[in-house]
Image 1: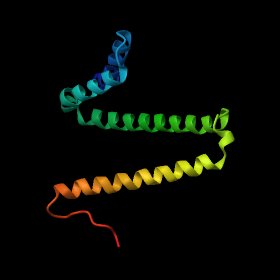
Image 2: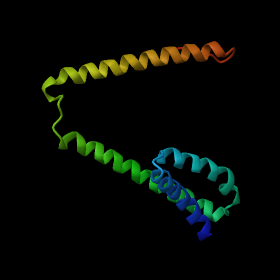
Image 3: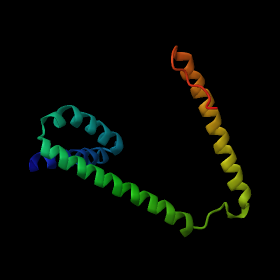
Length: 126
């Protein structure tokens, strides 16, 4: 079981190192490695190893997400931003633009989805 787990953990890291060494994209390398591992390695590992890997991947993903949001939160207050002299106008304009873009996205996507459906079309909630 330990060789299965080490293979599933080390293969993406090794493919990343090789890609970086060749000056290629490490992220694409990890993505491609994940596709190959899902096709070839996942069906061949034992159920206990699958449980351990699933729990380990979820823990790592949650930890990485937490670190990213911590850095974003710290970065908001730790650095001088060039937009401070614009005041609340920039914030209000940004919120209005985001809501308008979301409205257009929903309208266009709903229209395109309804064009392809003959039954169960999306209707506005009343």
